[in-house]
Amino acid sequence: MASTESFPVISVILPTLNAERTLERCLASIRSQDYPQSCVEIIIADAGSTDTTLDIAKHHHIEKIIPNKLKTGEAGKAAAIEASTGELLALIDSDNIFDDTGYFSRAVKILEDESIDSIEPMAWTYDPDDTLLNRYSALLGVNDPICYFLGNYNRYSHLSKKISGMKFKNEIDTPDALIIDIDPDEVPTFGANGFILRRTALDGINWHPYYFDIDVFQQMVQFGRSRIAVMKTETRHLFCDNVATFRRKQSRRINDFLYHSRQKSRTYNYRAVSIGKYIIFILSTITVVPLLWQSLRGCLNKPDSAWWFHPVACWITLWEYGWGTVRSLAGVSEYDRSTWKQ
Image 1 (cartoon, one colour):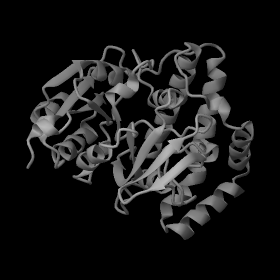
Image 2: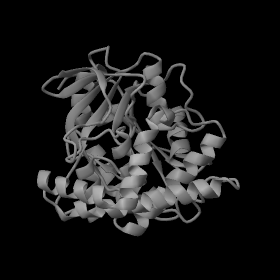
Image 3: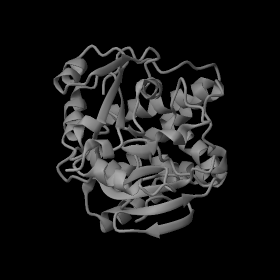
């Protein structure tokens, strides 16, 4: 094997809060990478876990465990990046698992092309033995169904048979990846769950004290760092086990988005998405029939009963986003994480 001096250091940016359900598998998958572990720096930014999260981290010999005083995952990412030293940054959540042991090695090989600033996995791992909600997310290619209607999803969808509904300026198909030039007016929600970028790609970008991944990627595009390699690999995402958790995560998502939007700290341009797409989502959800048609199409493309959760997911999303927006008219604070667990 070549000297580790020839391998760039990868800083794994990993926020946690009561993540014992998933962290063991996440860290084991990172430690199983065939990339030299001496060149992998894992920084955990913990928001005050009271379960076994920190014990799991110590078991995997994580030397950099720093406090995340602002509690949110976005704040944890910013704190971990500040404490990191690597030339490359890997944004990994505690519920991400890399079955592909060559993910880091292949990503670094692709990044030898200096015109490429970032790497994104192409798909979620579909496992027929996984929970219904995890299968649904892997099949649709997105955890938030409204993104499918908006077209800004960023993983391969077995419904559309595309990696995004956005139009790309240029697309080059290689054996390892699709090399894509992103149009500043049509930016998918790239930037998390295995996203790898050069540290220099953050120069001049506002990412502190909250690193909002999709906002950061859109700013990268606006700064001309718009070439991304969508690597032909999968990432397993242990998103949630049940409907109650899905509802809770949707509630948190809209609550925090509205709060930080009011604080003028969000920059992703949702206004660039046609208002008609929002209306189509609302009407499709209320009338249900278009959702059932999508579920049927999905079943024909990739048979699985999880497709029939689609109408339920859309109804929960419409309710939580609608009610959250109404509540915000009276003011909104950050989502309470005092009892949060992964």
